[in-house]
Image (cartoon, rainbow, N blue to C red; front, side):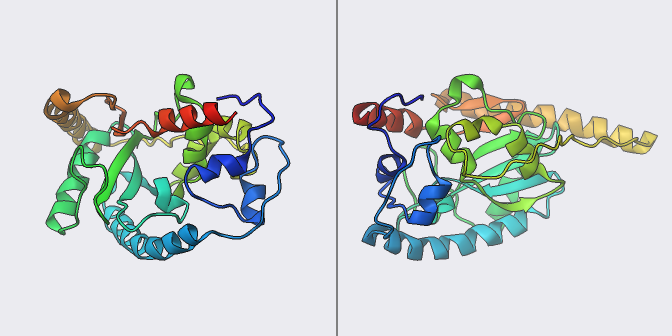
Length: 264
């Protein structure tokens, strides 16, 4: 979304989420080059949500530490309201996971098995909110990190910029940001993105290692097909491909853009 009206402001954008910006936050979340002022005080709702967020953050960190034991998990990050330290009492815990190249669906299977065996609560499909449940709604293969141009707008830019990394192997987080520099067109002060080019390292494999890699690839393809067949009847607007899985049944981006169009 390109706001051409003088009525648009970062303050109004964050008010949609009942998130009263402090003066420091207004600098970070400055929209383009627009200069604004704010009272600088957090509202009661924000202060209350910060308390709820502390408890949820503890859970998120424990889960991230557990998932880091899976070698193909390259990155685990907090997204959504919790990433802004603004999760409500009944909010779930949104996590983003980036996997090794060509290992997304095998990794996803391993992650769910691990979480089920350790008795973590996972949000059920089609349930809007489930208090403190884990919502693994964003999966990316490390070779497919660029956000599609058709989905680039003020909302998705903010969502990407606010991600909080918990597990970050081989500078995967930096690579993710580097490949999505477009977010700075909307929120130029939101995060620092290095101009350094990060590449996925490749190594020479022994015959035994190559055989094992091929076997894993066969299992990966099978894992994708089985999980896709299971999901297919339920898919509406979700994105499911061999290299990404994005589960956002509620189109918050569309809702936010609609509200913004009324504001501006």
